[in-house]
Image (cartoon, rainbow, N blue to C red; front, side, top):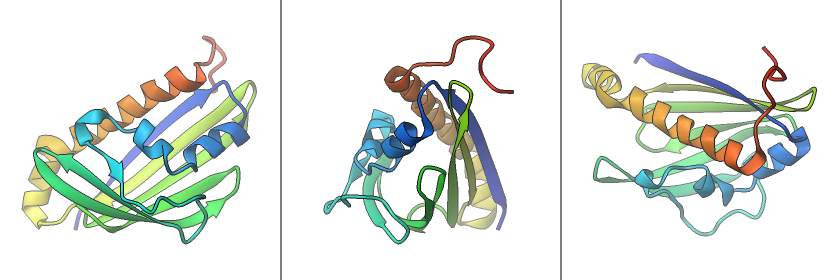
Length: 159
């Protein structure tokens, strides 16, 4: 099984407590997900996110209906959380979300480690469309976060 990594970072001009609260409100997952995925949380929607929270989703990708179950494996309030796929389209999915207070805002870092099923067919799917689709999803999320929280003035984004 081949393990892939996707890493992103973005600085938002808001306090970490506010950005973290937004990310840990389960209903905001739909806000940050592009419409082409037809992403919907399956009720009951958790009232709060904490270690042990399970969230079920339905989505569509390339015309295929998919179900996904995530577990919040770890959560450090205001700092980080990890979601892992319990059931879904990946052989494995481990997504670390980190929130670091920086001058003038919050650095949001994502590190996703994932693998695909089906051996060589999964590797081919990754090259053909999975990697590009994940990049497109994270690009959308980045733009949506700027729309919601604003962007850092030029020259103030930490290196």
